[in-house]
Image (cartoon, rainbow, N blue to C red):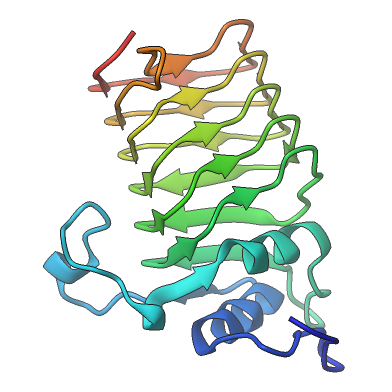
Length: 200
C-alpha cells in the first residue's frame, strides 16, 4: 500500500478491499457471499478465493486509523462472508468504530491483548485462535456459533456489558485448554448455552 487518494483509500487495494473501504465510510455491511448456502458456509470445505479475500493489515488500518465517515454517516466495520488473510493484530490498540462480522473466515489468529473496543461482534466465524488477554470492551463481546481451532484466551478481560458465546465450538491450545478466562469480569450477562469444548 502506498500514499492514499484524497478519499483516504490507499493505492494497491484489491477489488474486495476497496469494497470494504467504501462500506466502512458509510457504515454499511460489505457482503461478499455468493448466495449459495454450501458455498457461503465458513466451516465448509469450499475454498474462498481472492474475490472474497481481504488482508488483515487493511482491516487493522481501517480500525486503528481509518478514514472519516462520509457526511451524515457513522463509520463501522460490518463484514459478511469475507475471508481475512494474515494475522489480525490489534494488540494495545483503541478501536473506535463498531465491529460486526458474520460468517467470516480468518486464515490467521485474531490478536487483541489489551485492545479497547466499544462493541465487538463475531457471529458464526471460523478462527484459528482468539488471543485477547486484558481485552476491554465498553459494550458487548459476542462470539455465538463461532468455531475456534486452537483455543480462546480472555485472561483478565473486562467486558463492559454482555458476553455471548452461545453454541460456540472451541478446540484446545497446545496446553489442552479450550477457554482460558482467569480474572475475567463481565459487567452484566453471560450467555453460554449449548457450548462445545474439546479441552479444559
